Length: 225
Image (cartoon, rainbow, N blue to C red):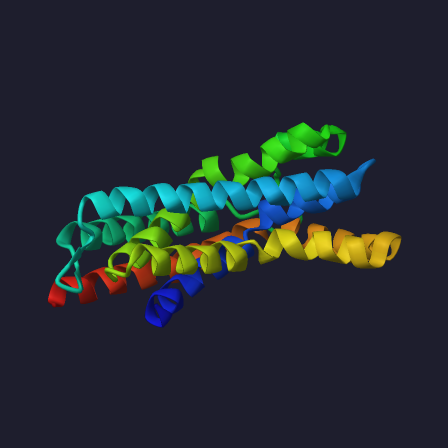
């Protein structure tokens, strides 16, 4: 179980520091009734990540992701494909990064997120974790890494919970700071939001490059057994 948790840790960290969800939760927290909306956002985010991971684990279990303690061939193929896709996304993000003096583009819906109701804030949290292709890709990869170890269902669930909690640190931290520091947290969170908005493309390109290389390495190692 420890090895499985170690394998998914880099993937969880990558999800945790994705800029857009962090920017979104900071904006939600700064809106009227921000604490309630922020809590709804984070809870829905946790549910979304857990649901995607659980579905992949169920699917992998039905297809026998582990053969005599070793990863099944199809799991290595999936990891290799995900790794290559991440490298492609890394190159795309790097090419699309803003040049010096250019404004950083952000999703249009972020400009209105401070007007969201609590229900809409929850919907945004769920969508960013369970429906966002980049997050889904990394969560699928994490679940595949868990499934290939052939762990009992209970241990798989424990590792998945660990992944979800670590992957949620990025959205949990602004909420905790707001609850603990109240208005004193606004300045700090605005600085974080501005920095992540500016360097969104660079952060994501580096993350995709590192995680893509990791998944390709894990797949090649699995093929060699």
